[in-house]
Image 1: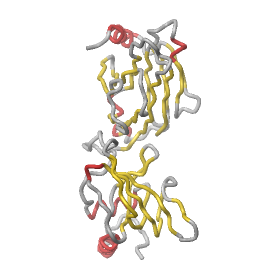
Image 2 (image 1 turned 180 degrees about the vertical axis):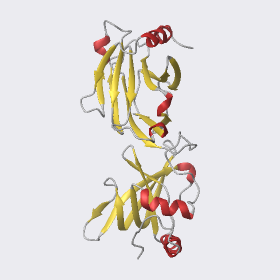
Image 3 (image 1 turned 45 degrees about the vertical axis):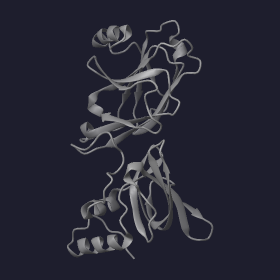
Image 4 (image 1 turned 90 degrees about the horizontal axis):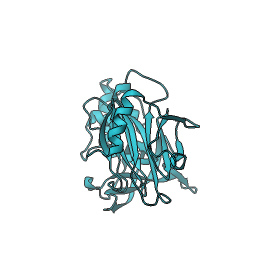
Length: 287
């Protein structure tokens, strides 16, 4: 059921989209305080962010925010962009809705999110409308989340960032080699499981690093090896295995997420067969 504030707001939105306007200093992240609304608790503030990733932090939330997330450049694939937001663990003080043409759809209810949970929606579904909940004491309330804009193919699941819990096909492996944020040959040092976060963390020792977008793997001493961690959903049931693997995946919210991880000898065979047929989408050293 909509609150009286929301009911009144819908009418206001249809007439005027801006109650007050605030641009973030770096166009990627925004930090503000609801204390500026203390005498006007029904104010709606507009926030414009123009980056592929960033964060929002709203201290002492009162009134509401409309957050407009857009890429810094418009492309033909704009309509396929997915917005994913990850609330911080202690985020409180507001409900988050999707707002489009005056219609509101609840996305995240206050305190109704699990640790590490990510919420995704199509960018054409609207803007984020963040409404402060009524509080006796706002002194310790902070609404905060990270966001990312992700390229998503039509028909794919908007509500997951991880690869499905199944082996990648030969075609997916060859494509992953060319497009992944990280590609590394190595062994599994160990696997830990976290039931609260519903995640498994794979400790990896890398013997050959082909590519990494961020410093996932770091060199250790004079061993010429890199160590790092990769995350995957707990439901995938990852267990330690012997031998060399080719680890590939993507970066989301500063964490390495596993995509494909074939045994290296299987990758060599798949790559050679594709190369012999002239079907490999990119070249990589397989020695």
